[in-house]
Image (tube, rainbow, N blue to C red):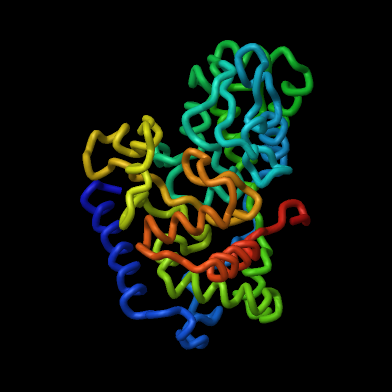
Length: 331
């Protein structure tokens, strides 16, 4: 997206947020009919489709293999654990050098549904991101010569690549297999998705009330669509600057400014998806919010200029819990 159109999009969503704030009033007074599933700007997660099973299986094996890193230190799954919501439960993951990385690990689940990847949105394609991760000295820290030699020396990998691609391991095949597996990591059938499809009792009355608050206060302006986020950039600190109270501003805090050098991009980050958010603490780009309640409280103040009451936060958190989907038939 060109810079001009990007800022038009961001401005449009800010205007939408203000419209919610000005028109909704207290969400408790909102007409429930205005927040029915039929009117929802959220769409259910689809099931994976159109993927080659042989490539997905190979990508799964690669994703969990430490041999993709130099000196066999870490695997992709070291930071993106599929049994822990697609991240690693840590404030910041450890790099291959044994030191904390700059950013909290975003979930890998449903990542393919986002318009950009990583907190700064510096990649548009999974294959490009994967190659950067493999070669980054603080991440996998490998080279293609090293990696392909390891894979080519393994008879099981040679056979798997032959079945999936008709030949020995090659750079494009590795990247395609990893991306194929990542595209399979969708989590459909969340209780809220079932509600959207017309199953009214799929979520509780408290969760419905939390969703009304979520919409009425304007959270939906940035967290909408199939991924309930992940489709635009936004400044962290629209109404209240969370960085003003910090002793030190890190490079990670600068967001997209480190890529573009544009002052308008200072503290601008990709809006994260809220899919499975109840499983992915700690929160924010730096992992500074330890609980979902804390994250909701901070976001309401910084992004909407609202100080929420405790019971309102609790209701929104209950709604967010209904966004946990299924992976391989289990939530």
